[in-house]
Length: 165
Image 1 (cartoon, rainbow, N blue to C red):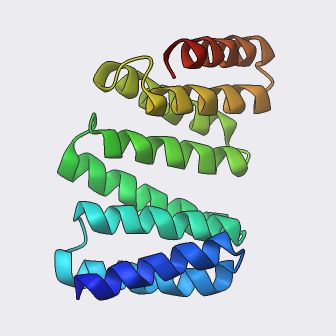
Image 2: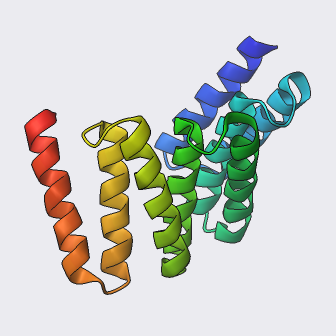
Image 3: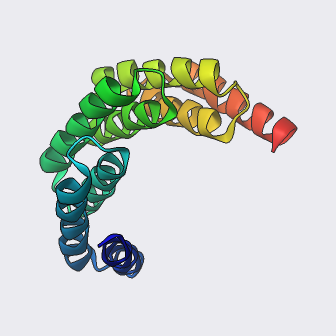
C-alpha cells in the first residue's frame, strides 16, 4: 500500500539521519521492492527510491553496488524520461559524484559536464540545481588536479549564488 511505503521511506530517512545506515538500508530495500511491485521497474518513484538506496550503500562503503544502482537509475531515466529531464540530469550528477568517490575522475568529469550543460539549458544558469552541479564539477576538477578551472567554477558558483539566492 502507498501509505506503508511512505512510512517505510520515512523510517529509512530517520535512521539515516541518526547514523543507523545498516538499518536504513533494509527499509530502503523494502521501499524499492514494494514500489517495483506496484508501479513497475521504470516508474520515476522507483528510480528515486533506487537513488536513495544507492546513497545509503555509499554511506556504508558499498560503492560498487551503489554505482550499479545509480547506473540502472540513469539508464531507466534516460529511456523513460529522456536525456534532458531534470531527474535524468540529477542521476548524471549523482553518478558523477559516486565515480569521484571511487577515484574515477575522468568519468565523473564527463558525466558532470553533461549534467551541467543540461541543467543550464533546461533550468537556467542561476537555478539552485544548476549551481549545485557546477559546484560538484568544481569538486571533481579539484580532485583531478585541475585547480585553476576548479577555482574558476567555484568563484562562478559563489558569484551567481550571491546574486540570485
